[in-house]
Length: 29
Image 1 (cartoon, rainbow, N blue to C red):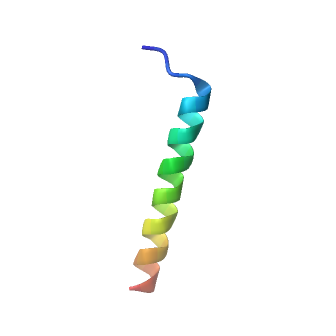
Image 2 (cartoon, rainbow, N blue to C red):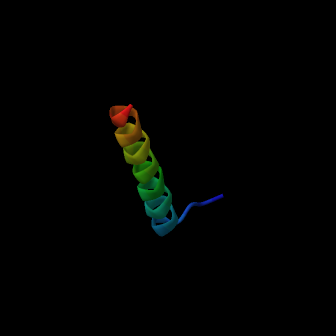
């Protein structure tokens, strides 16, 4: 199955946003 670059970019930005949110949450603790 071929993945479109647009889909890949959306998934990547979504994962990056989750990582940043988890990181800031860990920093607050």
